[in-house]
Image (cartoon, rainbow, N blue to C red; front, side, top):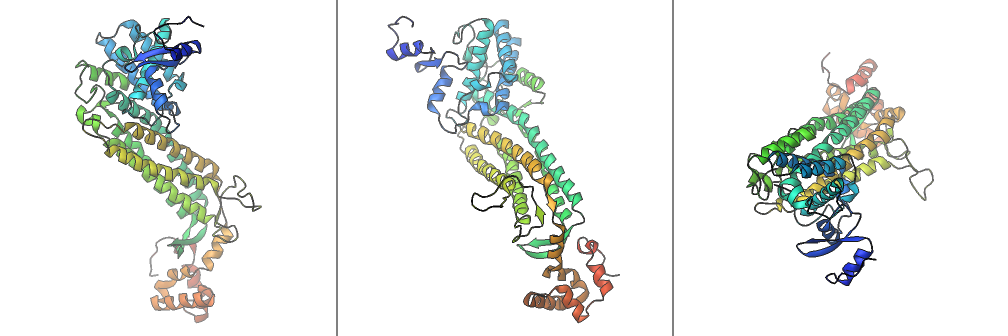
Length: 484
């Protein structure tokens, strides 16, 4: 146990004796775990923010984004002569470790935090400084040799480094989302081809409408998702404009006039993403419009996915008392009390993800609106909701494809039975027997329980050859000339 130090409180001496080091900031000394690569400001954030329970490390792409921004800034400051070679090399080593996936567990701050992201920025600064100190042969916390603020954060503010890192993290996650969406759409295309010859009843307002093929129904699922593949892929352009070099409010205070261009060029080269400086750094520091638009497309996708999953649940309902037109692959027993019951658990889970993403959009919208003057302090919530929505949607679409869509089968006999017994068949005959006759036949079929075809035959309204031609799948499920 170390000897007593009279300038330390009893609690501080106890901390030193029990695996902590003391670090000092504006508010005084604070114990930090000896083995931790983060420092005093991160520790204060840990003490303050017990909110979502989701730390920064939950999103590895955000950690990578922070490392890329810090490495690019160090490169520019070294090139401009403000950062010594040993300091530069130590920072680059630390950032490379983070890019390699090392020490992400040291990013411990809650995603929801006060301070406009300062805790996130300082978590990164402190981890990089202490990794750099280790590389230089100094103990953690010996910041006279490599300082979180003076060196790692040189020429930066949270207000330009943090939003830039968010954009890097989003763009590095973006391809995962687009790939998952494209693969799901392709799975529906495969099912559409498989089901092209299965005639079934279409429905509007949950009532019988007109015949279609199951292939047409699944092709519609595919196409509504395919529409968003290109749109979401193109959204990456929104996020390539950054305010790096604007420092606190966009005026560039404490940064060399050459710094912004050099840093953004270094960031683009290191990330492989063609970042560009915002035309107005003051505007770019406070405006969250790009994030609102980006997440708006995620909400649109969530709505589409939820609608598709609603349809899959309806089409597979039963098995004896529902539509029962398709079978979803069984994934787990569905009840603790009803033997033999199997639930559509995969679409149900996707529905819930969609609801969560829609909720994220509301939270993000309110956060974007809540900025005042030259900064939006709600940016941590914006980052959290964007990254969470991308992750959940990507995983949900992959799950839906692998554990549901590719295993769907058609109940062909059931589809044919519902078509043959449907009142909706009368629509296909309407142009040939007239609206009044069609209405009368439909009403009689509904009241008597007899089929439309039986009544048409009984009244001799169409001969058998014409009926067969009109009720063929080709005639009922696509446009055709009305005159022979």
